[in-house]
Image (cartoon, rainbow, N blue to C red; front, side):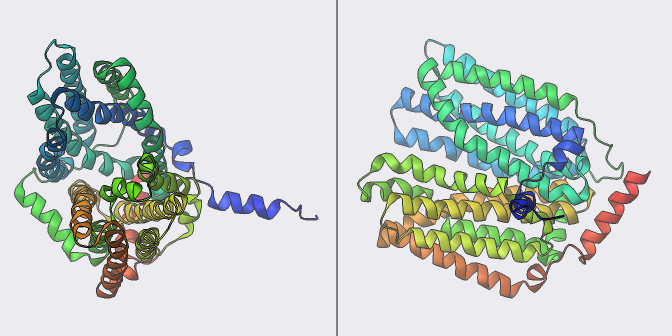
Length: 434
């Protein structure tokens, strides 16, 4: 039979198109995915409304900035502790209880916003509580994923989760800003309460097998055991260290307002801030090819190098759209790195340690951007905006190359031969047969 001219194109599209297998094959993943979509929109409502309300109440840049400071310590402490309890207790119950807690915190914000004289201290306290509860929940949510998705579909599940987040990061902030500005922050908070109730209903329908009854209780020693496990595995340490290095040296969103001013178009700062999400969204939609990659460690290294190079090139771009394109490429590389890192984590970490390692992961990918913006500001004070952007990108490339040289087991990781991946695959296949 003669081959039609468009057959190679269809074959290419099938190869690179996003794999929807986890949504088709797993009822519980569909429920978790739908819950995440609803919760993400509601969460962006509060992320936009809370600093907006703080600005309205105080008119102070410092007061708005201190909201993030109030959130930082609970985020770190609860992220680590959330990993410990995720391995010791029922993960589904942890997710449900923290979701209820998050709903209550937003309800408090709603009531406070409706008062004749809303209290500023409530915003700080509730912001800290929200950060803590979200960090308590995240490790359990991450650790639940390998229990509801087939071993060979974990990479596709990571890409779908990235697609959900990136689509929300593009659409939700603008829509949230319109709602908060048009109907007021109380309306934004109220809608978020409703989204949490819908999310709770979806989460109540999730069914997962019970965890092992031999899990150690949550404790400092249990946390230390998780850290020791990670340190003993250079492939895992590579995923953390490369990502932290990439973020510390090349994450520079704090520079975007200054960059837009230097170009004489201050209104484009929002364009710069959305560029990474646009690139990430495109990468997730075309992520089907990642299922054919087995050397995920090398994939993380290459993606991190591309991220650094794209940021460095952005520093010498003379036009807004040139900078946007570079930042979009950087976002796409970061998305692909995230898919490969998540695949290594979910395919190789034993279920009894998955929660604690998810807590470490949370710490690695939340601290890097914060430190990166601090680094960007310090370097910009020394040499200017473009110097900070370009030097940061080049330092990222150098740091990643050094990590690749110092961690050969990470660089050589292959899911087809890695002992941890093979052990987890065999264990999950045995469980599915019982």
